[in-house]
Length: 81
Image 1: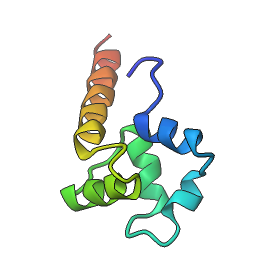
Image 2: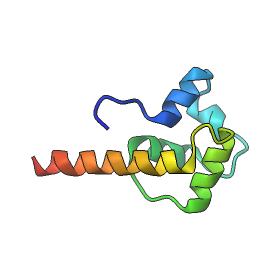
Image 3: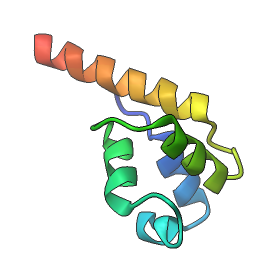
């Protein structure tokens, strides 16, 4: 992703919400969201749907998937260099 900020992180920052607060009472955990922000791990469709819904779909499932793809492609490029 280069220097771009993760869209979920940007959404949280724009609302002054911490990752911990965002996860409270939700069907996903802090470690899950942390890994998503870092582009690490695997995520079920249900989890991505729940995270998107928690943003009122301001950060859509497709945006989350596209961002993961970009993060992983960037990591692969760095590893190959």
